Length: 105
Image 1 (tube, helix red, strand yellow):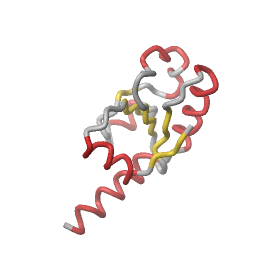
Image 2 (cartoon, rainbow, N blue to C red):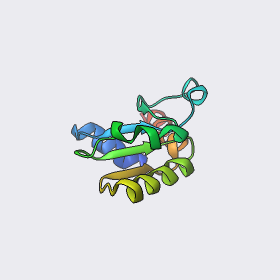
Image 3 (cartoon, one colour):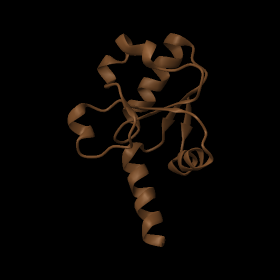
Image 4 (tube, rainbow, N blue to C red):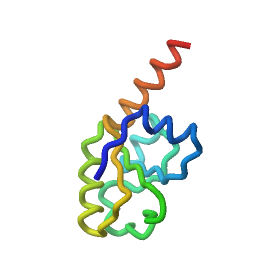
């Protein structure tokens, strides 16, 4: 499992790099903030592994990064994926990063 920073994620988005973004938070959390990722709540990941792509990088995120790191490790060990990333600091870090960039503009 690799970590990806908000800055790296923004770079991937800007460059048009293809990746799958998966949000492992609960639906009630997504209502408050979203990055537009595909929702697979943490407890449903084992039953929904076939929805996680193997042909492109996958970025998993949650609120703070702890759940996404655990899920990413589990997926790598279970399915032997080589393309799994966890968003460092989760959506909190992403929102802080994007807010700081807007303030600088």
